[in-house]
Structure formats: C-alpha cells, structure tokens
Length: 60
Image (cartoon, rainbow, N blue to C red; front, side):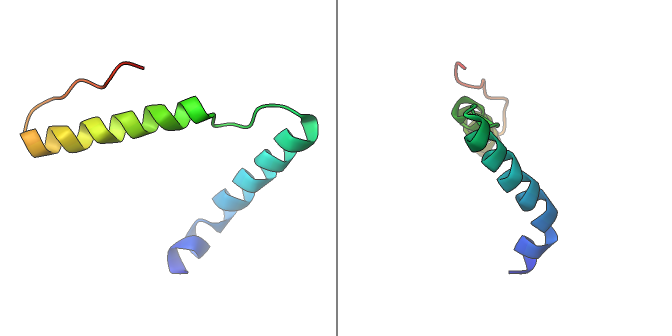
C-alpha cells in the first residue's frame, strides 16, 4: 500500500484522463501501441543486460 500512496496523484490524474476520454468518446492515452513500445524497450533492456551488449529494439 505504501507505493500506491506515494504515486496517488499520478494514478488519480490517469483515472481522470481515462474518464474524460470515455465521456468525450475519444481514444485514451497512452494508447495500446504506446504500451507495446514500452514493453519492447524493456525487453531489449533486459536482453542487453543479460548479454552484456547492446540489443536492437524489435521493429515498432
């Protein structure tokens, strides 16, 4: 619960933005594609750390 309270303002703003998108019938941000890009960056970072060398990020 401690970490959730530390970031409560960020979570609140995220929730407000989502509600605004639903009410305005617009796409929420970040998008699903944005999330996929983040996952690919993290995966490349993990692979780079394990291999001890740079790793190319998979195609966007």
